[in-house]
Length: 346
Image 1: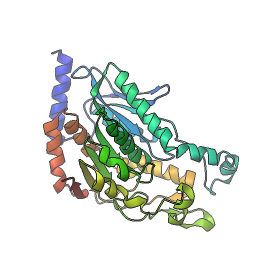
Image 2: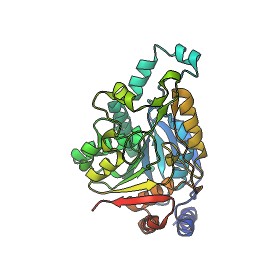
Image 3: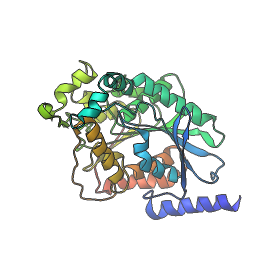
Image 4: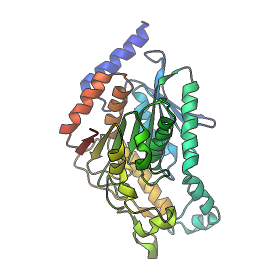
């Protein structure tokens, strides 16, 4: 075995044993734009086994892919090729705090929002990303996974469900972070078709997509200040309800093979963050400025948000990379004070 590859393997193994999958991994990461596909986060150097496992990441509604750069760079640093579509990231400005920007976009707003919430369009983008990764000679096509946040979290379940219904085993693992069970088709209604293992992260302190229960998000736009719940059917159709048809818990309840981890005291944005969640809180503040929606800021009794640590451990186990270390790290979740509860499929 070439010395550089042996060194990389030993480094990865040592880090996994020392700190689990916390913090940055052993690889530096390069970020580039791939025409027609999105942002590519790639570990530098040679893959230990000649090719990299790979992840397609799907962003949230009105959430530009670059806002997730810190999180996706952390994932790539553990030896995963990551592609994140940049499509559907612009909903336009809808906040009365920015009247001139809103007025300038007035006639484009319906078009932009309709495009951003085009579920079939996002599904097509995810499938295109999968084909792109599969075509790369430096990607292991037998180790492909899907990951998404919010709208993207719901859509990766839908895409995996469609592939499963067609008899495809292309996707070997699915990670859904604060998944929106309001996309179409409703993820909880189709998730049974997914045979690959699914890891779901949610939080009861998430005001937009809690594990279960009603949306608690508020709108801060002048006379409209108050709960957004009454506005949900207006935005997403009369069949949409303020509980998103049972939320993430409903997705879990209907899945064949899933684990749901309830993260303690995080918001809809910081649940997808790393370290102290600072970059994703900046994302939330940006989103408030664009939309006027008041995304809550729960006070956490800890610093390091655990979502990506457990996602990386799950991918190591599910993709049969370092399955032993991955399982060992997942097993310790029961005693992790940052986690409220864990549910596992029977």
